[in-house]
Image 1 (cartoon, rainbow, N blue to C red):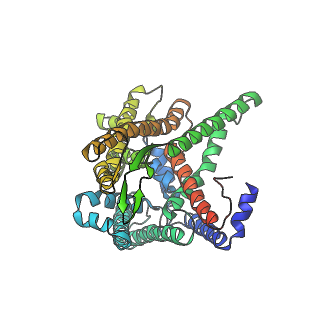
Image 2 (cartoon, rainbow, N blue to C red; image 1 turned 180 degrees about the horizontal axis):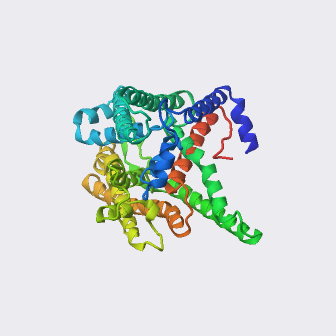
Image 3 (cartoon, helix red, strand yellow; image 1 turned 60 degrees about the vertical axis):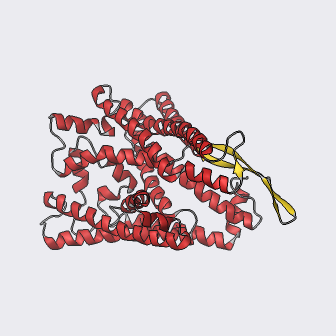
Length: 438
């Protein structure tokens, strides 16, 4: 491993790219500490303590704590993620966007430009809602139009700058820039979460009980990480055989290949979608100042909050967990259906003279791929549910309040593997042995 690291830094281009990424990450963390001018930075900390559902916890975890400290990066890259998902979904409904997606490099550049404009528009809408909704309630002391405008401009500019940094990392660094920005935000919260676990389960206990608690915590984290690695790496290879044909005086073709179907076909998207929908009612109630009531509406909102699930003292709230599981399964199937088209794959195989052994070309191939895909999606969704529910279970039963749940671990592991693969490919070009072949 040490020799591999030495080889990485021997290559000038890779060395410069890694240093560029590190420099950008430093900029991100500095920006996450700079408060927006004219706001009360303690407002959200006090406001969070008064909330029963903590609907913003999921959002704050993705911003690396920038939201609660109300820094210039408070919105972070969530507007970009939202706009990317919207554009992806619209490519199905709008033929023009679908044409751009198939148009090669030029089409992708146009879609990227549209995504950027939509990101700025969403950031502007979110920052305006926050400035008005929270500003009047104490976020902005002596609230007026000028102060609100400053907050809106700072938050929108911060989100746009992070989008720009992410794109520069992709271009001049290693890995996917937006994913790396998201990962560093999540990683920045881990030390405070570990301190919280230490104070809750180790500090003040006897040496034996403290050591046992520490070992259990480490074991649970390792088990989840290993499970995520298996989930991300698992795939089903569908064999494809191509027929031989005459081309001039030669017989060509006849080779065998395969279609790789990943077990976790939709990645972390189903969890993000499901969590966003579950937190939406709580966000709306918080904006309206009705999040802490005792009526049936407040009870429903509490049931939709992950903070109230798996608590022995309030078992009825765990019904929300069942809805969460159903949503994860639904979005796993839905997202895969818009990103993988078995009919198109079957047609392409048929046009190239290929076939799946034992399966007739055309519709039979499409039906076969659909059948296999449905099994795989269910297995992948079940894996996502296990990863997502383990931290929720321990949070509810043992009060282990941490922000790095299953979603965070999937993102961290996925981004690290993706970055290592890119470094690996750069090193293989120069005949160096990489991390993954060590």
